Length: 543
Image 1 (cartoon, helix red, strand yellow):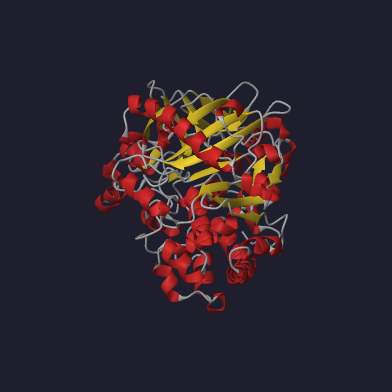
Image 2 (cartoon, rainbow, N blue to C red):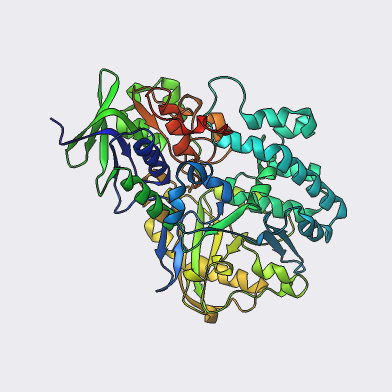
């Protein structure tokens, strides 16, 4: 006899599980239980008082695009906004300072610069032709790519036929050169732009999302270029990103849901090929009257929760060999007395307010060298630091007159160094980062630092689905692991070989990031098998 029972059981209380639980409770009219190993829900929507007392840091998701929460919160759960911190757009969305001569490049957010004329002026500092190219593709993005992208993100992988974004790319009016579909990032960008500075900037900016090496990664070029437009749509959650986890949890509870933290699921109970419930690590058995959903990694789903015997042999091999080493990063958080003042601001004042700023050199091949070092299992000797601060827009994250900063550097996977080696690395990288930072902003010395919180891939594996490498998106965002191929084609539609067992999470389509879509799309797939409300069918909604 089961110790408890629910209509629907969700394994893992990360943001995807929370969104799905809200739909199952409100629109599916189900009794839903979330079982979470950790002490709280939210997963990558995580924020802590860290670096120093009174300083609030987003320890995982921090740059949030406005479209991440649509249509879920704008249409289906408008009560969310009564409980959540508002989304604040970035004015100066991203940029770079080049160490050779302190020249700089700023890209303005789309809400600040809706026609991108200010951004074009920045690009024209290096090449008027490249500025014209940027404006040409921005127009294409707004008119064609953006609507197709939303239709792709907020719908499950189609059972047959192309994604909306795939049809968009193939539209002759887009003007995409066929060779671009197979070019690597650096090949495509050099095909489009004449300025090394612009190529270096584009490569490093979207590297933060994809981790795609610039060369030899054939087919990654187009998404790498178009990803730069998405950075123009980023902002932050006022207060902290974790505020959205609390808001979703409140909506879920108001619709009758139940959450059980510090309750780790060990196995899915399967009878005659159908999921019937779960067994916890303490031995308790929980009945699922209708369905079970895993939000863990594909490896945990296959090898821990249900066993490889339930999958085709080729699917098991694909899951076993998923790439999850490219986007292993450090995120250091710095409590500071003053925001950095960059010497480049003497000629480009807005660079001081840049929300995601690359401190790099002009050589587009710097990231190739960095990637080669990492593939050899060595810490890269040359930094390609990205830094940011929500303190430009959000005064709630630090004591009055003080500020919180972040820095990012690509490093090794968590399992490529020992615990003692990571301890030593944390100290050394702090010294290296400050030395590098101070070359661009002389006031960013240790006398400006109150304290820091060094987070590495080794720390990321506290969320078990990020093991063993600590890759922030669970699996890499490479072409063979995006869209209809994510995580593998057989699982991309959120169904598993076990009846009434579904799967979602950051390792599911369209890509890995802190958006709401994977939970929303999993509910859409569940709606094909159960009689539940389908709010997207009302009022002529596009998705």
